[in-house]
Length: 451
Image 1 (tube, one colour):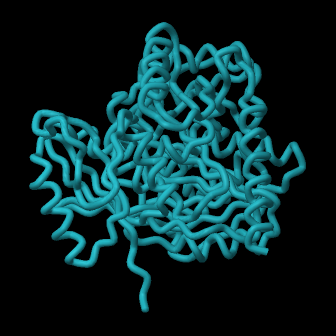
Image 2 (cartoon, rainbow, N blue to C red):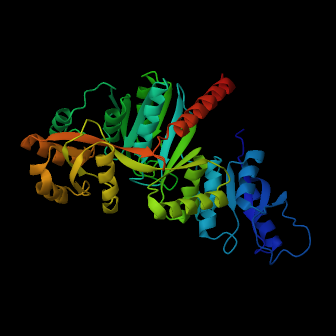
């Protein structure tokens, strides 16, 4: 006989208790195995008598924490929402759904169902996922920083990256693949996406990478379609000690990573982080890296996000503030340099100062149009004749437009990595290594439990 899944019902005091009891009875008649009713708020219609709903009742003074604990305690796999406005308004409902999905339970209402994304357990190596709240928050930069830190610590990392421009078949790139501008331009001319994240990762980290594609992304980060499982198989075959699972946009790698790093641009609306399914991503995180923490505005925004995390997140992830700084992958000291970047225009003076003071370049100009090929070509024409080096992030237009321009005009192309630094100018290595060690401990414990 099939096991009947257990359910927790969320109820409120804005309903008369007999109505709530009647609804729960109907659910049980329909086959629901309700083990607990969680009173999440409201009291207008409760009266003074003990609440009798035909199942055990627990009052939740902090509904989100209470739900998280109740799912673990009861082993419930379904959360049935019998509440409504004003007790559970839309934002809070999404937070409750995030709690349920995080605890591997479906969240069900009269006209909606949220199910946990498919994230099967990892085998073969410890894993650290690097996830984000959207595009261009610094995920690739943090993934690369993690891989370099792990390589320097002797942990033999492999990066697995999925993307909306990923290869049709899982593709491995060796650490010593010789990714020169000429090679990447040749790949692009043959129709290959020469700037996929796994290629950028291999170029900037010196570790093996595997790339694959994904299409679509759900509210809780599940891709609609992807070959990620095959990419993982290929990556495990490279005999890593630690896998770095790099996400794409707001999508989350479909694998149960042993530890997770969440990358958040401080310019996000805090409600998008602690409400909706931003909270789900936050709950997965062992480390939160706040990027773009520039100046007084960045400090204020970081403080607001940290306060929101403290108030709304039932876990307590470590938080570190960071900035991104350009790191040319070849020597540019004493050279006249033109930079193409995806960074916003207001970041230009900071990037130029870093390239000049730290790397010794003389910056002639910066284009912030790396995502706009027509404007990028126009910007190239303004300074290219006077420059010694075209410095560019490895994006599609960085190869197709900038690298090609350099090849045609005899100008050196140097690819630039964006590297996360603390506000004191240090690397994030201690924080990233702490996550790797946590992942390895969890992976070893899981192996013992299933061994």
